[in-house]
Amino acid sequence: MPTAPRLFSAIIALLVTVACSPSVATTPTTAPAAPPTSAPAAAAPTAAPKPAVTPPPPGPTAAAKPAAVAPVSGEIVVFAASSLTDVFQDMATAFQQANPNARLTFNFGASTQLATQLGQGARADVFASADQTQMDNARKAGAVGGQDRVFARNRLVLITPRDNPARISAIKDLANPGVKFVTAATGVPIGQYTLHMLDKASTDPTYGADFKSKVVANTVSQEDNVRQVVSKVQLGEADAAVVYSTDATPQVRDQLQIIQVPDPLQTLATYPIAVAEGNNAAGGEAFVGYVLGLQGQATLAKWGFLPPTQGAAAARRLAA
Image (cartoon, rainbow, N blue to C red; front, side, top):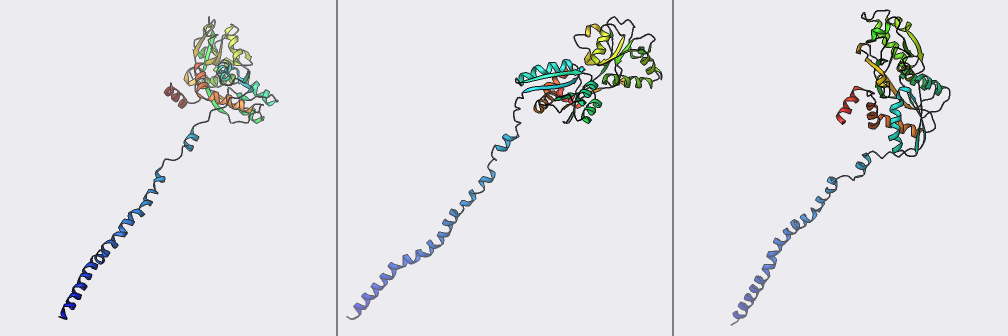
């Protein structure tokens, strides 16, 4: 019976082999699975690009908005052409409401006189001229430091007293014998514009080459500024004058006849404005900005002034 123990040992060995084989078989299947499960975990860096698509901080957007203009204070001295008297006084009301601690002080007169005063040492924070020549003169004298900009234009018109004793109906009648013509002194912008108009007429056969000389011979007075010219006609001391259209103000319009100057003879007056070398630079800049801004331009239009450019006129119509 020696074979029985050997058979029994073989059976035991076989059972041990079978029992151990499953654990060995599973080892290859679990080992390859480990890398895939760890790979998705490493995919977390895909979240990193998110900050790149995040909207930028609001700081730059807020900075793009214009800052509120702080009110100015103190006296602001404005030297301005006499033809700006009514419109600037009208502007002063709204400007001073926005700047309750500021006080506008106006000096109105002929631009030539104002430029001369500035050149002689008079102090102003703003200079508004009725032509570029006087602005340039003030700058040459060192009285204007800021850049000048045209803020308005104006047309020329012919005025007569309401009863029109000389029976003037057109520019050509200014050369008629006996007409009492009044204008401004040499160098005053309205006087210069008038002479330019007469020069144009003298090159037109309709008026004749001697037209200017005839009108000059009919001149009975040369006034210091355009408002004095208007007053002479209004009072009947002269038969006719050439003035700015805005000088036929509501206060005097019913005492005058207004005759339009034909376009071929028309010369548009231009009005530059600049900050002058005064004592209140901030106040001067504020008033110049107001005149050039929407409110100032609307007030100028209300008083009959033309905008600085045709483009500005179109923009104002679109904004209305």
